[in-house]
Amino acid sequence: MIQFQNVTKRFGEFTAIDDLTIGIYEKEFFALLGPSGCGKTTMMRMLAGFESPTEGAIYLAGQDMAPVPPNKRATNMMFQSYALFPHLSIWENIAFGLKREAMPKHDIRDRVDEMLRLTRLEKFASRKPHQISGGQRQRVALARSLAKHPKLLLLDEPLGALDKKLRQDTQFELMDIQEKTGTTFVIVTHDQEEAMTVASRVAVMDHGKIIQVSTPDRIYETPNSVYVADFIGEVNIIDGVATPNGPESYALTWQDGQAPLNVTSPHTFSDGQKAHLAIRPEKVTINAEKPTGVDNLVQGKILDIAYLGNISTYHVELPSGAVIKAQSANTRRISRRAFTWEDTVWLSWTATAGVLLAE
Amino acid sequence: MRRMSWFNTVSLTLGFAFLYVPMLILVIYSFNESKLVTVWAGFSTKWYGELLQNEAFLNAAWVTLKVAVMSSTIATVLGTMAAYVLVRGGRFMGRTLFSGMIYAPLVMPEVITGLSLLLLFIGIGLDRGVMTIVLAHTTFSMCYVSVVVSSRLVTFDKSLEEAALDLGCSPSEAFRLVTLPIIAPAVISGWLLAFTLSLDDLVIASFTSGPAATTLPIKIYSAVRLGVSPEINALSTLMIAIVTLGVITASLVNKRQMVRQKRDAQAAERG
Image (cartoon, rainbow over all chains, first blue to last red; front, side, top):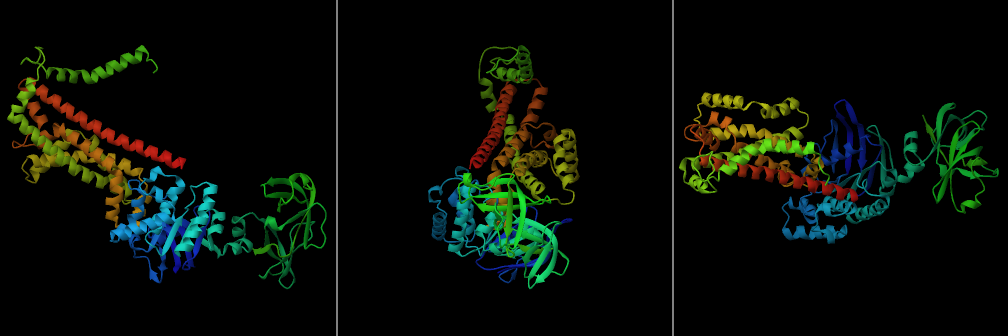
């Protein structure tokens, strides 16, 4: 539905978006994820019409958007600051966009009431924005931006100001509303957990470029670069040199005194090519006794334990000084755990557990 | 309440005495029974009554009021527009120069402003009268309005305007429906400020007024040269009252806005 075609945006000397081409489908929940200053907000502002591309074109349903001013676009935006009109009541805020398009009065009333019901704000219709809480304000902003039946809803860090609990509830609410209304949602966020939770597809951005676009599970399980692997969740990155030792199978020579690691990869690496193995801590098994029949095995000493309640992350130092993180679920009481600080443990993982990435 | 040291008490008293004793004397003598200004002969409001019979003064008062309303209204419109462009216009060429230039009349000696306007009006052959005073007053009070309005606009969240555009407003609708109602208190206090400035201006008005139109300050000034009459005292007292009222209203409007903003901000933080 939306097509970015070689879009570049410069602010003076600074290039915010660099030759970007990407498509967003109809009725999808699309997340733009990246650290601040990566260009994700600029992309959204270009979709809304507040910025225009320096080069390239943006198409919405096949139509070039460049000459269309923001007030004529079938897009609506939910602002990071919510941007509720302080001089109008909640009801008037939601009706604001509808009144602009010469809608009959009773239709406006019906639509506003429908939006109030959808966002469970019926009780607050006559209040002013400063008389309600942050979570309610956020729902007003959502209701206001949905009221006009936009083809595309843009959400700019919509949950940034909420605390964690409220945020999780709202994330599910957002997904719910997206399914009910069938609107295409594009969300901008720097919170990877949020992007993974709500979105059907995630684009990871850095320095005005899109590094990877995929479903949340593929972004997590098969990142295409060290940057993505590192940005999303926790990861161990092991640098080494790959040597083919079978079909789609490689031996990774990584540190003196350690046996090469066995890795599978669908991508081809030449003999002696530098490579990085990205492996998630939860895919590394930690044992007090030496396990048998495993693809990869290293021994080390527990340096640190981060106890998170349901899981613990162990930082294990290898004899070479490298640290590998391993995670395990705390299925037993902490007092019954077989190892603790300074203990020598065995780490193991399968050949398919990690992803081999090129330089 | 903490008690003040004698030094602070004295300096405060002296300072305020310095400011207000002359005015206080004027107000007191406006209620003097005697025709002689310097001799107290008992309380009376008869000079106020006589003032209302004085055609010349009433005429001048009417001119002054007309000039003040017209010039402050024009100044508010122009000043708000200028402030909007300077705050929102982005970094156009010479923006710093413009914003410096709009504040320059604040420090310009009034004599110079008056003289240059006089030369302009003579140059273009405009007959001096109400019209020229209005123009002159607009010129110097506009920059006060733009100072007041632009200080409000600086703290104005730009995304509110963007939200209005996003919801289908044209830029002018966005200004009318969103920006203007929110900055209204600043605009109103700007108007009141311009109104008071116009009301008590003598220098610029004396350069730009003609025989057909005389403002009250000019009238008083010329009357006093023939000797102070109790009538003048009464008139001046009334003017003090009006100006005080204007200034107090302007600051109250602004303060209420500030308080509300602060409360909103706190409420927002609490969530």
